[in-house]
Each structure stands twice: as structure tokens, then as C-alpha cells.
Length: 72
Image (cartoon, rainbow, N blue to C red; front, side, top):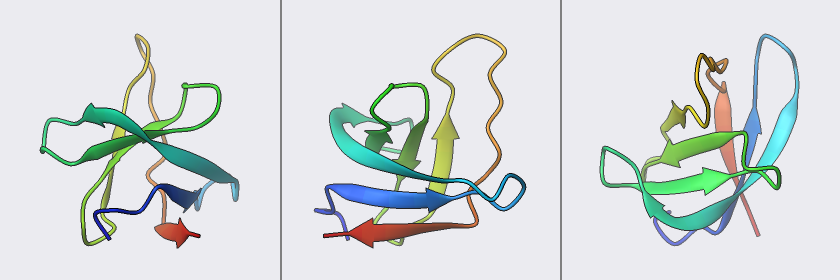
């Protein structure tokens, strides 16, 4: 999964789904960082599809996605 360019993140609390695209950055865990088109939603996703949300601004808290689905 390391070469996946896009994921759909599904959030259980809100029921929202957001598409994120791979950026040229890596997160604290050394895995690729993905961002939505606004750059507000950012997530580090490892090869197993585990997600760690990355804050893009002060006092920001994200719901943790229930799943990250690779997209073609």
C-alpha cells in the first residue's frame, strides 16, 4: 500500500468521507502524509492503512477515521 496516491477516509462520528491525496511530506512515524484539497485535513497513513491525523492549525482536533480505503 505504500505507493497509494489517494485514500478515502471515513469518519464514524460525523459520517463524513473525505478524499486525501499523497503529499511530498512524511509524518513523525516516517510514513507519507496525505491531505484533502483544502490542506486542512491531513493524515499520516502507513503501509497497513493505519491512520494518524496530523493537525494543520492550532487547537485543531480531528475525529479518527474508522477506515482508510485506497482509491485507484
